[in-house]
Image 1 (tube, rainbow, N blue to C red):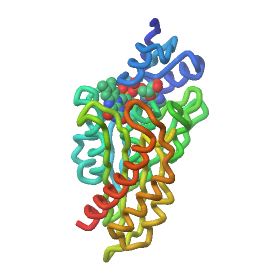
Image 2: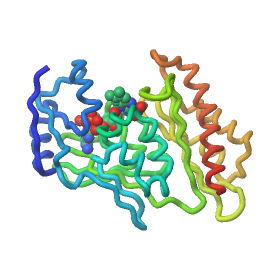
Image 3: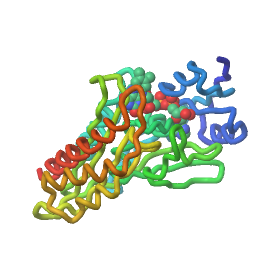
Image 4: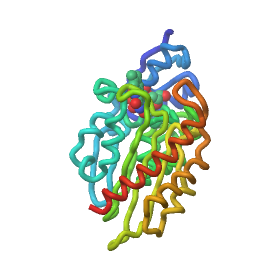
Length: 288
Ligand SMILES: Cc1cc2nc3c(=O)[nH]c(=O)nc-3n(C[C@H](O)[C@H](O)[C@H](O)COP(=O)(O)OP(=O)(O)OC[C@H]3O[C@@H](n4cnc5c(N)ncnc54)[C@H](O)[C@@H]3O)c2cc1C
């Protein structure tokens, strides 16, 4: 296990190095995913490019345009940020489920998303919130919706030399709220067997659901938006039974596998249960 440690101080320098070393180089942010993969010889990059010292990739800003999260923002910062807890509590809720405090202190949002695990806990809530990824690369800048960011297990749409710079989340609509429910065998330090995020927006008055977005984790090759389940609920006064029907639709949309943490059948069943619960919880919060 030998690699060269590269420490660029400017983003341009990092992108140039990555572009000219393509398959040989990998970004290191917090290192909580990649160092494990290197140690297990699942990835053997010749160069690890540490971007922690690169300016302009960190920090949280919130204004009328919404929320901007620099890729280097740690999971712990998201979990504890007062503005996130106030405006986007579903993000703080999801962040709190990741690993341990130590892992959350080192692990970054960019790393969680770019590692592209179908179980990445920040992915489903960001998809449900309609977030976008701002990507910088040798060809300039582009924006990709979070639901189109993932290309397969361990794969994103990032091309050679491209870096995830920040994630933008639209301003929360009035009378909207979200919920993220993660199922794991243990209470902490475990990745999701199933994770479901739902964001519900009610009409300005009454109980009719104006919009809903549901995203599923750990039950497909990528974190997945459950559009058929959303269709069941959009424009309706959502009852318990309707939430059950949406859960059944989400089960149809999932394509889980069997692995050491759960069978495909169990995962599919849990998609139904957790979708129902997440929708009802988000609905309840949107009413208040
Ligand atoms: C004990 C333990 C428990 C964990 N529990 C959970 C859990 O419950 N839920 C969960 O979702 N994850 C969990 N993880 C995984 C990990 O901690 C998170 O995914 C973390 O957010 C990764 O961030 P990082 O900065 O450490 O990524 P790194 O390891 O530095 O990078 C991960 C990948 O992303 C790439 N990358 C990083 N930043 C960028 C960028 N800005 N642009 C382009 N590519 C980039 C790297 O090249 C690498 O391929 C756990 C890990 C450990 C070790």
